[in-house]
Length: 117
Image 1 (cartoon, helix red, strand yellow):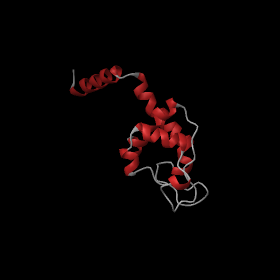
Image 2 (tube, one colour):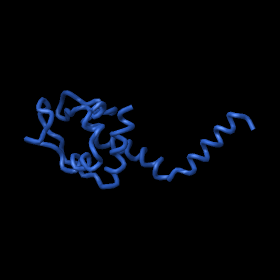
Image 3 (cartoon, one colour):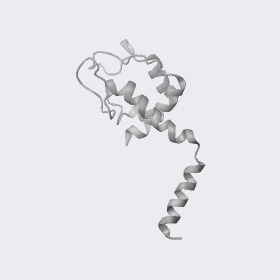
Image 4 (cartoon, helix red, strand yellow):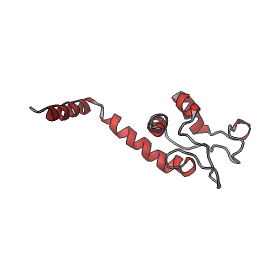
């Protein structure tokens, strides 16, 4: 058995041990982000500074990186507008999003980990 073959076999074995949801949740999170969040926050989470959908960056955000999943779920579910709005230079606040618990559970790791790469 060659070393390369051994590595491939080991990788396949490890992937087989992962729950199927681990692999698909990342894809679902990315898909949901592109459908819902990217409209305002940009396709790579860099934010947008102009237009009716201006929004702050998620990539590199200290809040996004350090927030608990429950804090992010609350922000997604209820939005952040009016006096609660953090970015005063952006005219509109974060609107509430009608995402299911499962969608939020999938999107949060995507935003906190994958988007930060």
